Amino acid sequence: MRIFWQKTVLFILLFSPFLLLLSDILSGNLIDPIEEITNPTGQWALRFLLLSLLITPLNKILPFSIIKYRRMIGLFSFFYACLHLSIFLIDQQFNVAFIFEDVMKRPYITLGFSAFVLLFLLAITSTDKMVRRLGKRWKKLHKSIYVIAILVIVHFYWQAKSDMDIEPMIYALITLLLLSFRINWKKWLN
Image (cartoon, rainbow, N blue to C red; front, side, top):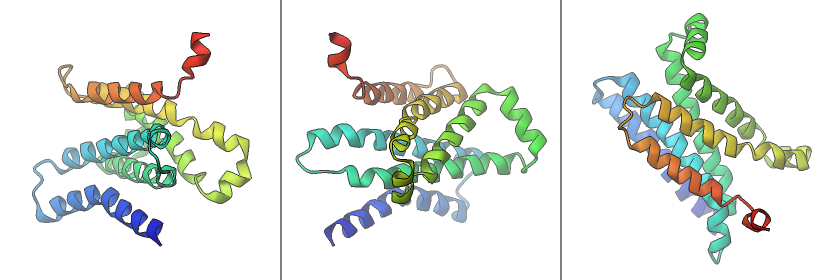
């Protein structure tokens, strides 16, 4: 019963950025709705992606297990990535020619779309049934989260309006730190 309440609270926390965005949309507080929704949804997707990467190192440090929350956090990252992509598709008026042209013309969109496809694969294989069905292949597939994190960071950096924008660099440093926890330092040092 305690886990149910913990997951309920986590769900509400992870869903609250969407509710805040929805509130802004419905109240008419947005000057440029496409941009003011696109950027936050992408940032929340990235934040939750990084939070899901943080679970493993925290799980090793904390005296209690938090691994049971990683799937929900990862799925919320995918949820916000879906919103992010949907806004792009709406902005392109669902015109396949415009979308394809944009993907080919702007490398940051190509990287973002590639990250989304990989994240989609992780989301659809995140059920207990798929974990059992894929066996050892599941773990290999889900290690693509590291590639996804790098693609998203580069996507964010390249789309930044200015080289002076520090925010992508902060996320890049956090990502490098989180990925460094995955390196088997003993293996590298010997």
